[in-house]
Image (cartoon, rainbow, N blue to C red):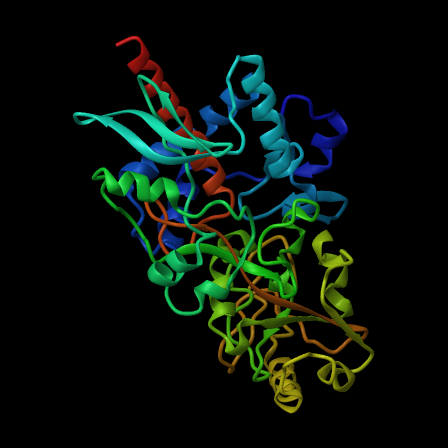
Length: 400
């Protein structure tokens, strides 16, 4: 980020995130099942790949709004995730589209790939449909970059398991596994965690697929400062198990496993200032009240008396002798309740109270590198690192 001002640098504490930190996070959150060879490439090529992207015109900016809190006048970044593409996901796509146009890359929209064209043991092209007609694209090299099957309810139920067909899809309705199936059809080897996916807490009443106007603001990622309550009025996860970017991708599955496939994130006034911008969009399903008893009656689908018992038990279990600090794993935990809350435990007792309704939003399916969970941001950098490698390999085929 060479265009940061002196003032921005002075007010920012980016901390550090070493190669060993990246290795540790990848192996720990995937329960030591991720592919060691792929991890080696990902970690050691990540910085060089971002520099390469910057050289081609992709701008990066600090994630002040999502990965930092202001403490003693400085923005302190946490969890090892400090940088995003300017403009987020849409900005990244816009940058690459502009770069592609400058380099005379043709992009064919409304064109659906149907199958890979083979000659002997080589892939030599793609058959597709465009405006109702079957067309062929022949090439010396073909790169398959077709995403997962997150928008295919039948494949979700088949590979991920029961109830996954009713999950909300955070992104495109068109990632239906076509590319994977085309590859399997010609003998590609299925690999990795086919029953795993990236899935988050998502607005309960969001549409079935992503909304381009709202983008990712249906997510609700300040849960570590809340207690999450299911339909039975009970907590069901350790909301403060680790930094948000190391737990959010697996908590969607936990919500999906609850009765009715929903939960409420409950906050009080002490942590309201820590809520991310996504909590304040007009589409959020929120309940507000001046007392817990009043709030209990507003939590749609929740058993109110058990909710009050849960809050009382939780409040009594919060350690008051440890200082709350949202920028570190502060150890402010609970004692004697299940599930525990390992960090950032604050009593829910200061009005006004707010609760936000969430369900499961699936982002992408795993396979390949990730198992069970993933560190936030590593999917984007994996796409960049391995995409760059695929491009380099394909270009070598052109001159072979």
